[in-house]
Image (tube, rainbow, N blue to C red; front, side, top):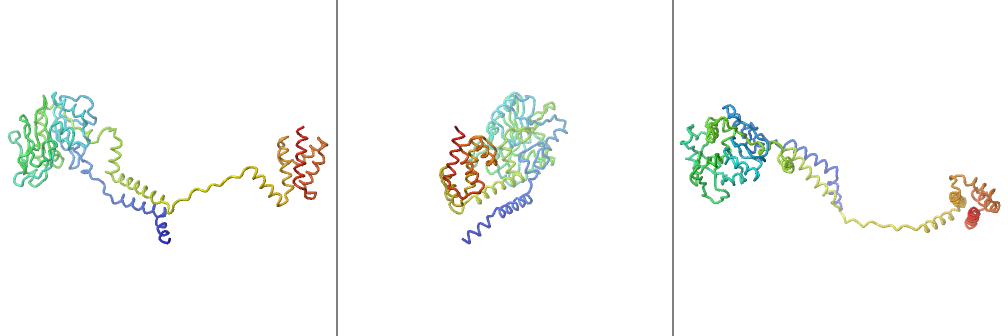
Length: 401
């Protein structure tokens, strides 16, 4: 029992709430806030951190190209004279959006994309992305027949994990993506599986597509170096060198614009931000507190049911109580008050005056009136309850006749 009492004291609501408040305060103070690079999970032209792509946007803008941002979903037909940049979107494209995008490319639009992992766009293009470790003696190399640019070894050093294009859904080691005959490999990497493409350009209908497996090609940290900036611009020029073409950065699938999925945003807020994690921990702690406080140490007893007395039993009990204390005056006054209320409705407290009036009005009950007055005033010897009741009954019959 002493051990049980100690446990009850430890689980007292005051102690539990103090511990919860201390845990929430410590979590809020010492949980690191997400950095800009963590917030930029995918390439966005709004993000100026090293992991973002704002430098690519401003670079094209300073070169005189017509650049724009799209913060709406692809629910209508797209412009055929635009170059669309879909760079590792955080929100996957829907099947209808992929269909409209590729239909626009077949009609003359251009597409530069780093497709999302295992997404519909990569599946429609017939590729997937896979991380590899390049050979130490063979860094990434450009197709010199297409580009006249500085040596790429300054940006892609040996021993770094990079992304390459692979066949879709292929999990067997040694499988290398072989582009179609009409495609051009713009950047490749020599790995233990052979020469694997990192960037591939190919025609699609009347338009063109550049598929890049490595998202680091377009990050701000890469574009700060001359080879990185030149390389990114050359990919756009390979698609189209016409300055009249609008270069559209897709920002809707990076989380910008109006999104209707409230549950997904609430889940991200609760799991990916410090205040959200504090709220989530408080909710879990509250549930644990309810479980701790709500547990009963012993099995609850069934509720006792008390059988009520009937009105006749109440009357009998009250009569015996009045008889025990010889409360003749009180019982007589109550009987007269009830008689008065039933016949005349006179307010309570005028029983004696009412009896005077009844005696003057009906001389036949004058004796009963005098008996009741004497009992109520206590000026006579104790009278039996039977006599009092009989007097009240005779007065009631006279009033009713």
